[in-house]
Length: 159
Image (spheres, rainbow, N blue to C red):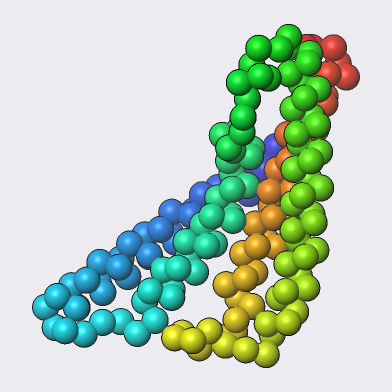
């Protein structure tokens, strides 16, 4: 399981790095073209917007696994270690349910977008929106992994 997770983390990190580099390059190129040649790359703003959306949804799963996802943990930090683990398990369960609900809901939205194209790039409209179910599924899997790791500690009595 750890090897699969390590491979998945590498793939996600490579995707995040590559997409940010592409977005940065496209923005830079567009600025140069507009400043010096009064021209620009058609669809560049749309492409960058879609890359950032993909980064947000895919990158969110990495934050869950590393424990850096946005949370309000001031109260949890004050609790005894065993209570911390139990509260984290409840948070992970809520995250799993919410992420899977987002996968199901977004699948319905994507199904409605199969017949349309994006305005500038003229790619199928569902492609940018695929970031939602894919990112949510990865996030759910990461929450499940965290639940497994913390639950194992609790069951073994290591907390």
